[in-house]
Length: 220
Ligand SMILES: NC(=O)C1=CN([C@@H]2O[C@H](COP(=O)(O)OP(=O)(O)OC[C@H]3O[C@@H](n4cnc5c(N)ncnc54)[C@H](OP(=O)(O)O)[C@@H]3O)[C@@H](O)[C@H]2O)C=CC1
Ligand SMILES: Nc1nc(O)c(N)c(N[C@@H]2O[C@H](COP(=O)(O)O)[C@@H](O)[C@H]2O)n1
Image (cartoon, rainbow, N blue to C red; front, side, top):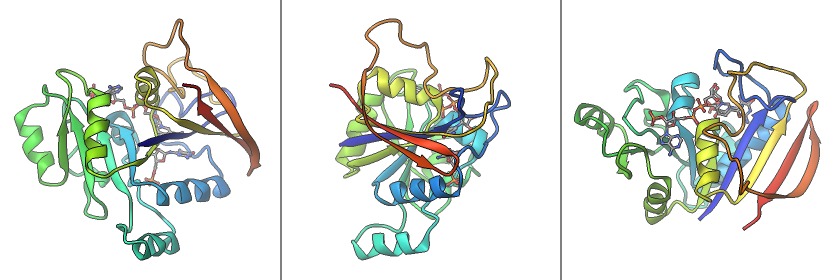
């Protein structure tokens, strides 16, 4: 399995404002790059915080890219995965529509009613007692044939993935705006590291739109 985290942040490291509403930080060229990355993935993963804030579709937007996937014998869109310990994904969330397969990763604490509602629209993966055990959940996804994984956020999930050592690659688009706010989400939130910080090797820097795309691999 190969896990790429991709996100867009402001020049001051924020993924969104303190209102936690979806904000376009990427420009047109970067959104096209993200679309290509999705098209080259088996699954696109987000945390339930992103589903509740953004109601994303996580589908491939460019029809030519969908057609190329079909020609390769793949589904038109990669699978979508929500990491959602207690089954808070709303039943009418766009991510549960029938455009692509969806997996919801739950913990054992998820109530039976939520499970039954979600099971009508998604494959359920249960891992962990109170919180999703990411190592076990990702191992189950791999058993389902999902090898090329793209994680699109948000900051809580990204932190946890670094914490358990699941991230192979990090691509960050740094946009030309300052958002600020101590309560605004950043690229890696969670409890934060105080030692044994994950270390990265810078692989490339590219100007895109009016910002910069940074690509790192994660040191083992
Ligand atoms: N600019 C960008 O590229 C992006 C921006 N965003 C923005 O980020 C914000 C959302 O980010 P955020 O609030 O951090 O939410 P996340 O999408 O990271 O979801 C976090 C939630 O995931 C659930 N979860 C389950 N298991 C775990 C685990 N092991 N580790 C971590 N989380 C787990 C938790 O909820 P529970 O305990 O209920 O399961 C947690 O609160 C929004 O404002 C959105 O617009 C989001 C994506 C990309
Ligand atoms: N790459 C990138 N740049 C931004 O500026 C963003 N705001 C995001 N957000 C991510 O994209 C998801 C929306 O996807 P759909 O258009 O609905 O398919 C959103 O939920 C974030 O994960 N990404």
